[in-house]
Length: 127
Image (cartoon, rainbow, N blue to C red; front, side, top):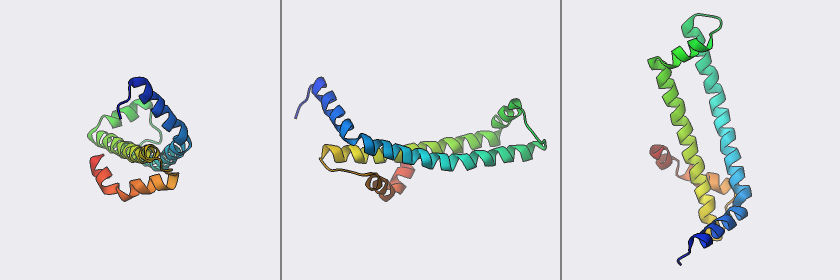
């Protein structure tokens, strides 16, 4: 089946309209997961920074200085890696919803999350 550009966009928007609720639910689930993961990590990094400095409070310049040290850069790389992994998992769940919509199958929030969990190792190594 060959579609021109206008038909392709119409088909895409039809699929998006049908699956908007599932897409938003998956997105909000991953945002909540990321928030639950990153909030304690940022707190731990802040506590580590204070302990390494030996001061009761730090200025913005001290925080930037820490982030430019080797341990700070390693921390930034680890935080970026976690963020990229969460985004890859979210994209896999969203792709499951989209493929289900193209095939005429309703894929709910839990089904999309289970789809990702079933493929967690390949997705983790990909990310």
